[in-house]
Image (cartoon, rainbow, N blue to C red; front, side, top):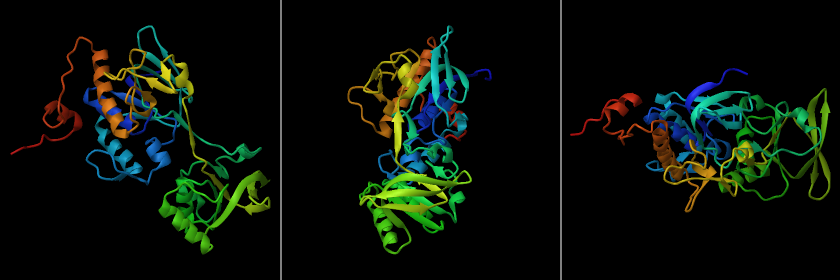
Length: 347
C-alpha cells in the first residue's frame, strides 16, 4: 500500500452533485479528490438514464444525463480534480491531528482535512443473475455493463431485462450484431413508450427475437459460455446459443460501509444540519440524495444548493480565523483568474 495522498477534501461520489461540489470548493481554493464505485463519472445520470432528457436543470431547458455530466466536467476543469473510479470507500477514520484517513477497496489511502459524502442513494452494484456457475463467465461472455459496444459487433447477443437499459441496448445492437434476442420474465416492460414501440416493431419483422421466460441453465465449451436454457412461462425449455449475454436487471444501491462510520442515520440516509450540511461528525458533510432533513426533496438542483452551502461551511471550518467573503463569478477578478476567463464588459 502506497503512502496516503494528502488533500484538502475528499468527495465520495462522482454524480452531478459531487461534480458541482468540486466547483464550489474550487472557488474557495479548496482542492479535491473524488472517489466513486462506478467505472465512470456521472453517477445515476450515466448508469440509469444517460440518453434520457432532463428538464429541471436551471437555465438548461433540456439535456441528457450524459450531457449534464459532460458539462459539469467542463465546468470543473480549472480545478483539476483527481478521480479515483471503480472503487468504494471502505473505511473512514479520524486521526489524532483531526484529519481523516480514507481507505478504498483498491487499497488507496487519502489523508483529507474534510469529507463530502455525495454518494446518491449509496454505492451502485448491478443486480446479478443467481445461477450456479455464472461467475466464471462474468466479463468474458456475461456482462452487467457495456463499456465497449464495438466488442459485440457481429456477435449473437442475448439481452435480459425489461427496463430502459435492456431495450436501449437491444435497439442499439439490432443493426450491428449478428442476432439480438431479448429475454424478460413477463411481457410487460418498464421502458420509454417510444423504445417499446420500436422493439415491438422489430420483433414483428424478425429483427429481434423476444422470449418471455427466465434463464434456468448454462452450457459451456472450452471454458466459454455457449448456450443458455430459458424456461418460458408455459414451462417449455428453449435452448439459445450465444456469444454474449448482457444482463440488465437494474442497479441495487447499498449504503455499504457508510453505515459503519458513526454518523447519525435515518432510514438509510445521513442526517445533516441545513445551515451547513454538516453531518453529526465535525468536518464531514453530506450533500445530494444521501442526506435527509425536514422538507428534503431529492432533486439535482437541491443538491447543487446544498453543495454551495457545504463548501462555505468547510472553508470556515478549515480557516476559522479567516473571513470568507461571498464573491460573484460575474464581477470578482480573483474568481476570473481562478476560472481562467476574461472579465465581462458591461456597457
